[in-house]
Length: 294
Image (cartoon, rainbow, N blue to C red):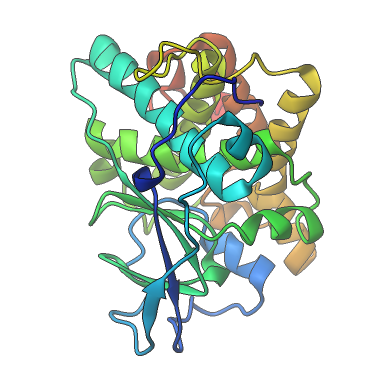
């Protein structure tokens, strides 16, 4: 999706960091793609990540140039700032209107190499995630290259924005109390963890539905142009690329439904589409449908 001329961005909306040191290991299976079976969850990482960093942490890339649509459409880091502000504007309006819950902005950290969080230390290998302990989304933009080179999706703007909106969806779930109701140790095709992830995909689709009519409160200009069919295919391709079945087939030769934590490629695309067509939080209620309807 393309950001409209006339919007104004606040570079301070997003924090950056660059960490060094050893980082924490993610249990059992080596390799970046295999790690994504466990990660890209947007849930509490305390069970799989270590406690503190043994390396140094420095300020990351400067975002001082991220002030307008031209920068957002050109630079991936500025696209993160603009996407965050669009998501803030949407959820400020829609969350209280639809659920009666006032929106609280999450933190957003774009990091390189490693980062310390309230859920432990993470390295870039874990992919994007949401930490409920500090209500912050963490992302290394190098993941977008992995999405294309190792997972087979297109590294396109709406694919990137879908990933951010998915993690934002976890923050909305945290505010609405869904996250605390799910036993994250329970896996399987109809598990609470899968339902949580599919709901976050749906909430990302809901953002895409409303993004072109969501207004920058600073200027009165809508943030984004309406998505094209090609751009929607990019987002759906990213959702498909991170399906449990597709990742497991790639890394282990076949799918193991009893270990699913995110849902199949088809489910992830279907629930993204449900949010896009339905446009409401209620249309994203993955917890009230039967397993056969997930």
